[in-house]
Length: 112
Image 1: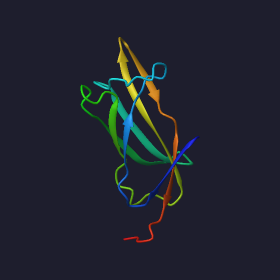
Image 2: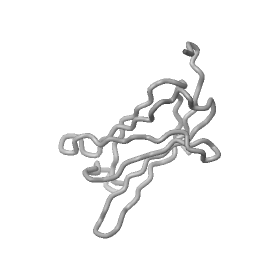
Image 3: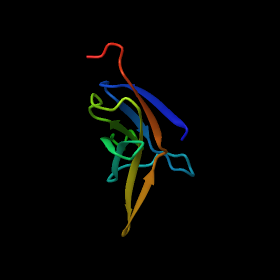
């Protein structure tokens, strides 16, 4: 697992996403695709569902925004997430996963 980010518990956590074709590195049109993700702890217990919204694919091909929801009750320890993109091709569903990313959840100094 190469990527790691930190977040203060209770902070808004959103990320801009850009999906690219693994071979060509060109942005992938996300029109009609199912996009989602989950945050889990080290025991694979679900902590949060990630809402992913694709932007206008005519002007922002491959781009989306991930909203991690309310972080105020997240445990103060390492959590993990990935994103999923499902596309229908004929009668098949093609599922593509992002790399898993670690989130280190920290207590804010100014904790409210």
